[in-house]
Length: 136
Image (cartoon, rainbow, N blue to C red; front, side, top):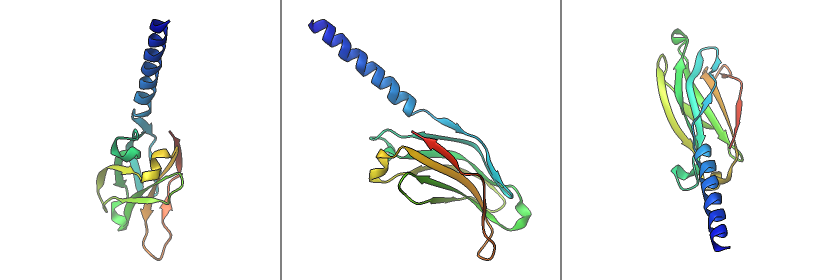
């Protein structure tokens, strides 16, 4: 009986470890684009609670695709229950981003949203890509 209980506990730990490994794996983000801006080679993962604050981890390339327009670009990311975080690119360049969105309570969040935008200044409204939704 003791051997059976030990085997059951070992199996549960093994399966639980596999679930944690899948949760910590990188997942692709399809290219986000709008007039003058693109986010390519993107991927995300949810960090485990004890690593990198347990936040939403995002990486990819933010690029200004219309270099002559004089506008900057940025990526916006939001996790469940919090406002948007803005990660700026550079005008006329491709910038590699590797950012983690976190807060103490964000370790418990299960949803995140990402979009790519072009900063058109204070007179014109910014234009953004479709907002993509991801779950833990």
